[in-house]
Image (tube, helix red, strand yellow):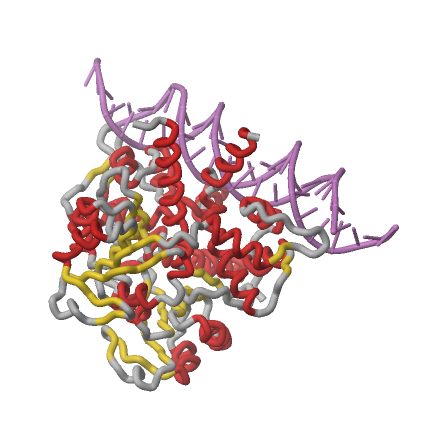
Length: 230
Length: 230
DNA sequence: TAGATTGTTAATCGATTAACAATC
DNA sequence: TAGATTGTTAATCGATTAACAATC
């Protein structure tokens, strides 16, 4: 019994990175299908819509501990609930946004971020012209308040959306204030103690992958044309 | 000889997805180090700074065809050049942004997107109040012009930053206009013909990974405390 | 019941890491 | 030269896919 429990625990700790990345995709997809009135769904339907392998979907679903019914499939709302639990969406994490430029504002206004477990509590900006203005439900605070706000509100996550040049300084300030995790949108590699979780958003990396895929596709089409001229 | 050439070609076509994702990270990192005056760098230095394995770095560098020097390492500017070639950054791809909200504006203003091979040529928005306004160097055009602009300028890539509800309609319009690839920031799964490359940005997915990592870390710390109370 | 779909074990595939000779 | 670092083969690790019995 004890061993079983330990295994279960490990299976969630040790979830493969690739599987973890797919989880929120399933979540968003299933929410969408649910709104369309779908209550039961098979692994092959999910797989087809998300361009995955049905067995992979079933393995991933197994990680949520939801069991499907042969011949019908999985209960959509059950999957949604268990994915939310798995991804800790119910346990709201307090966060601040540093940098109230367009990206910061876009994130603050992002519909349903709360639905993903993030509670944006404050926004900060260097620019005196921005301090005091409203962004969504937040009021932009001066950078000088940052440390105090982080400490007073037990902020765990900071979102960095300042320009490249300021990012490291902001990072240092956040670390000193006791932040636990940083979601970094600045296109720069931050230095921080190992105990701080840093996730770099890397918008350019994502673009590069698309760009490369497009290039390869065109190259292949070009080669095919040369090989077999119509 | 012919076989050799074919292998080389394949090695770039078949680059492992994970390796491809790391390439732009190396690129940004090396650019940063170059600005700091670094001209030569070893795989272990790169590995340490980016939290990778030195052998992995060497394997990745091998994909760029750059050869390093034992005892000194790799030439930084050579690596940068070859990474740019590999990622096709020199071959500017025409693109449009659909949706001139905060996210769209943030992307348009994103410093050095051109440096990543993307040439943002036009912005579109549904909102008559936004049409005609300036965003960076672009003027926002009405959605009704979309198809014509895409056709006239041989636009290959479209960036979708409209709200969820409008994303599928925009996608359909883009496909009809002959777009080849879509970089989708709307939190929704788009349906399009297989020939269209779609890359979903999925900001929430990224957050979820961070959130899960944080949760696991706290759980582990909690367990450790219980096991060995100080 | 028959048949579709699940859950899971085994096989395959692919990426990462270890080991080590080559070399500057 | 000695020693650090590369480039590459082989070993390991881990994720995906195939196969198939269980079951509704």
